[in-house]
Image 1 (tube, rainbow, N blue to C red):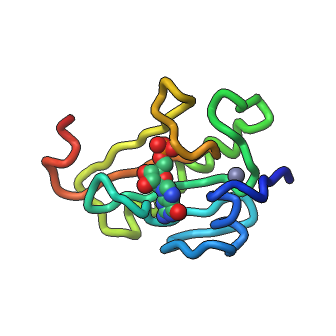
Image 2: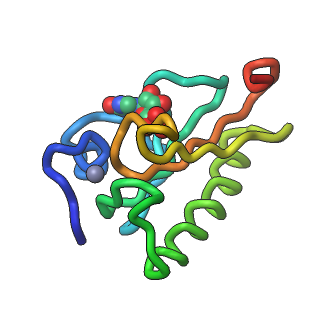
Length: 115
Ligand code: 5GP
Ligand code: ZN
């Protein structure tokens, strides 16, 4: 599996940088965003260093589905019962800051998500 020793999310996945983890298995890791935009803001991240959605292929289809299904489970476990938002930023024009694919899942009481 490809990883990048200089990538912050690869370092979190490897346990080299601390994070408030809520889930991990052999393919995915999930943790609280360090600068949350919402009362509950988690990132679901593949362990493989995939730079962005621009690098995704059919080989990643099951992994991407697993990320979405995991979001349902984790938001339920975190007590987010009234809805939430998924965001994936891709590339410079997509506002992506960390160049390792990640799914933002944000929930909790409004009005944080009106924008
Ligand atoms: P992007 O703009 O790339 O979609 O979002 C990157 C997200 O990663 C941001 O929301 C940012 O707060 C979060 N982030 C960046 N560095 C770290 C870190 O070291 N730890 C955690 N938990 N989140 C981070
Ligand atoms: Zn990485």
